[in-house]
Image (tube, rainbow, N blue to C red; front, side):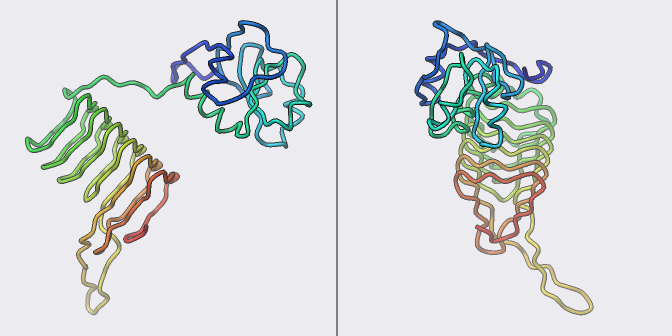
Length: 254
């Protein structure tokens, strides 16, 4: 079980509900009307928990698992532990992601503006936006409905953020347009200067970076990642992209 100090668990769920959500076919010898209360690894899962196998290097753990239900590919059904309910799918890891989200859905936040440190009068704020303590929103910003702006996040002038986005604590966003369903983890810096100088003597001359950053829908950006705005053309992060922590995306990159 995930630590209840940090996570709230939903459920339990019937096998049929899990199978439908995961797009899986039921096999094995499930007990009638069984309910499953959590997800766990093969090695530690019990009779009321769901697990999965995607990598064949875990075959030994799979064959001896006590999990009540197991997500697996069709070619492994003959090696499954007896008594386990089988959720048969061509993509067990993707199916596990769906089921794990059922047990541990994204944390809900009630709309709140009372903790925001500063919000320009010209900003347009959608319905149900949650501002956490110390957040700042500049002139002419637009923030879509259902979005979360984390503690001490700074949204600079003119930034557009779509619906259902999560902007992590201590993030800084400028010169950017953010699509829908985007997750930006804490400490990210988006839209700052690209690295542009005209070399010279006795000093280098700074070249204004006049582009922006465009982040399309369903993107996730890791903690402390920096994405520079373009020097003239834009820096573009396409729909569905996943970027890890501590990455640097230079100016004009697409």
